Image (cartoon, rainbow, N blue to C red; front, top):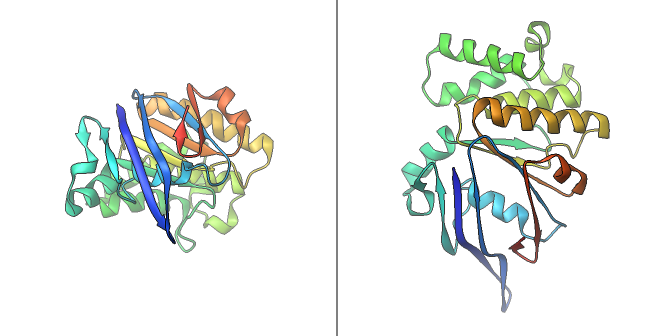
Length: 221
């Protein structure tokens, strides 16, 4: 369960204060695929950074699985980001000199999981996202954009996160491949019992989400 209460983030710009996120409140259950649609400058990327503990809120609270992350100290936040959050980016952000399998294993390595556990979980996840054993041995440069995004999604799921945050996950893909990725995210949210939030410019993605929001001038509707 994700619960956000009156969340705000204010930036100082010259002599002006800009409220990038303005008292945002919402709740999402486990297993839900949600989208946040908004134009550039609407505040959606700032909201994503707050949810992922990459930035600190000016005010308000964020509860993930009953834990208030806005009250966590630095060491607990590091653990939270490593174990409770998965990130999916528009540019995939795969490590170029690691195979698809090794990329998915990487978060588990950082979390201190033993090697057999890493390999087993990575193989299961790659199969779930449609990457076969042959492709799992390839470097990212030898995979298509859609395949790279599938690997990135599998990697985000590696440590059984409570929340996955996807920043323009279909932005570099053609519309047909993008549709496949959207369906994959929705299906995986339910299967893995993970809340997935995708931030996007693409309003067509909202029609396929379990819940959708629109962000404008820092406010969520």
